[in-house]
Length: 127
Image (tube, rainbow, N blue to C red; front, side):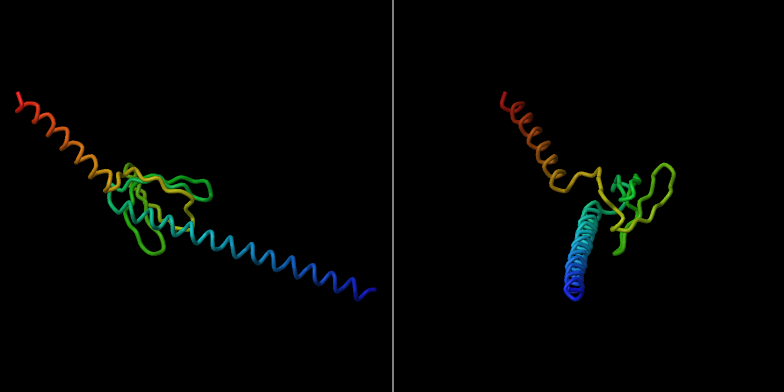
């Protein structure tokens, strides 16, 4: 009887241990994917005073400024008014909000302005 209880206890502990390992692995993979998404977003925004961002960290803090440096491990956000630079690693970041227009939006705005000017000039010369 004692052997049966020990075997059942051993089986239950093995199942519990293997399921906790699976949960740990999936959390690790999720963190890696989130860090990669942040890295892609930061690279899209670029570097310089026009690359303004608001970064929410996983610990609840917020960092505002512009991206002054990007490397493989993280990036640096510099506050324009205080000139304080904050080094951030991609895995610490929860969310990135960029205040920049993408290249496609900039092209669409330029094309729209050209079309409006052409329509105005067309009406002016048609009279």
